[in-house]
Image (cartoon, rainbow, N blue to C red):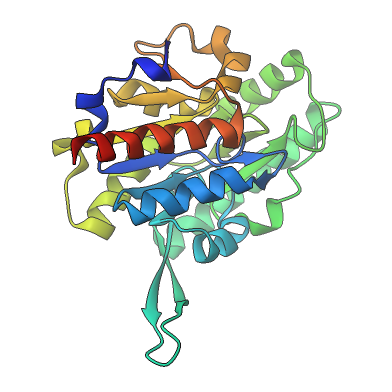
Length: 279
């Protein structure tokens, strides 16, 4: 991983969009920091689309999809797409959100069938792996389950491995984020969610413009995104997972000096400075 300052101007100037993780990438200790929020504003003003892609549930994500200056949030690891349009009041010239749009990758019958499998697997984890608890955001989940390992509970590496073995044994996809172990039914993931969002919202084929996007993340459940994007950045706390990521075909190409939201703000600054230098 190279220092973010090594990112060539010629590469930065062609970036038109940012995909970003949320937990421990945009947020710090569970909340978005002023510098990260300001970075989102700066990117939006510069015409750079920002799409957040997270393992967090749709219920948890909805308020942020409405209030943060994002193009959209893809929640539950590629299963749900949230975006809000805005209209301007002619009297006050104030932008205010209209009804939030929510789209699902799978239809309702498929989601109901998957939910039964997920609930069965979750019950097994809680019963068979001592010390495990569901993530506190579980009531907002519609298409996956999450086991807390570092947000409000602490699991050891041995416990995390035991949970993963059980979930994989149930035929589920499972990944480890900086705070949760997420599991779901289906072949979707953060990368397929990115392609879906660009097609649905912009009417474009992401495969044809991969060099115009950068991904920013922090943990092992971002590995597909790190590998897929030529322009990828790990915020400094990604080093926590460096050993687990070492087997990837491509590590994050660049790494920030700051951790979490401060690191994301560095990325925004690098993109904005490239726009200014090219004018």
